[in-house]
Image 1 (cartoon, each protein chain N blue to C red):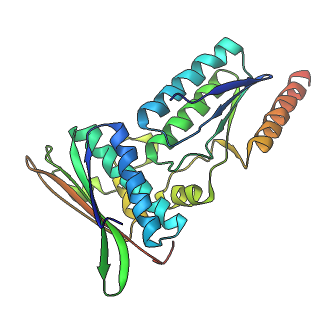
Image 2 (image 1 turned 180 degrees about the vertical axis):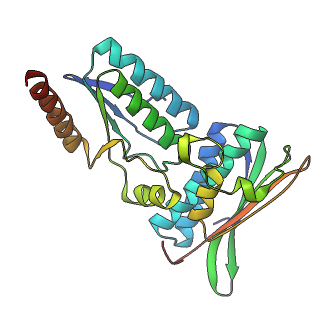
Image 3 (image 1 turned 45 degrees about the vertical axis):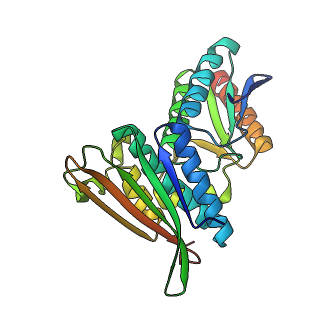
Length: 137
Length: 125
């Protein structure tokens, strides 16, 4: 099993490829089906954000091992316009079916760890991890 | 590959075979809405058992078809949401409270039959 896979993200087909690659790494590592689906769904959201708001970027998927815990780490990077207020972007405002604002906070709830850094004019990086056997599946 | 849509009596059955890209989801949405009118369908069943992920985009698109179908005088039911996918949707906070769902194709058909029967009763009453 490869410990690290880089998926270039530029189209909706790449979104599918990224989440399927993440799922297969999770499954091989022994994460449950539920955990793998939570991971795949979160990857789908961050990958779509790249395609929709920036155009292209990349997602690095890697197996991580920390203090005896194993998991899959996702690093989604783009060189887009960046987000001025990261905290606001992560807030929920899902009423009225708004497009923005649902994907990232949703992805954060699916993962065990979630960090987002962004610099205006530089780009955005989302780093998130799903651990094997984490509480709440 | 486009999602096959089969006509079964008054119903259209869209049976998703594989993971769908956003483009394919939109194509399915468009084809279903077009075919309701063409076939004068009374109901639509969308079988999502093969979908690996139902994220914000897919759920919003499915919801759009369901609500539009209703405005066209028909009804839609989503069948086959896998347990792990359902779990992820709940954790995510994706709600489909106003959308009909059923366990599988058989229950979906029963649901639509009942829906049509109830509507006929109301019309008569």
